[in-house]
Length: 169
Image (cartoon, rainbow, N blue to C red):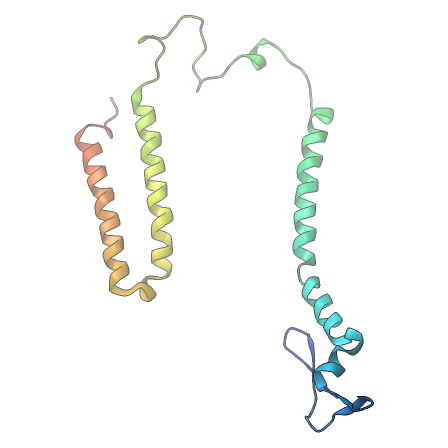
């Protein structure tokens, strides 16, 4: 039996067809039966196949253990000096008051528009990065799809700009 080692370190067995050995009265054992006998080669390959995932499993266990350890240990070790200022609500540097702010305590819409525009541009980048990676493979069809996608965003940006969503007073 010739044993060669593959690049990944797996042993592979190869036999010439002429090496059939009798397995019993009137039966011949094929090379596949000989390799499977005892399961030595398959057991080695299976152990090596599972073994490549061991570092990943250890990393996941270590990360989960660190997270649980940090959450449980933080309140035990950390300072616990509470006072009125630390327990009060904090709103972007504005002192909270029991009286509503002008406009019945409503937040300006400009904050929400800014947040939505940020999400819009984030989504645009998430969809454009894969095109930038595979632009050659997508060809002219991909260029047309991305052009339509960008045109849709420019229409939305133009609408927001004309409505004054980008102006801060």
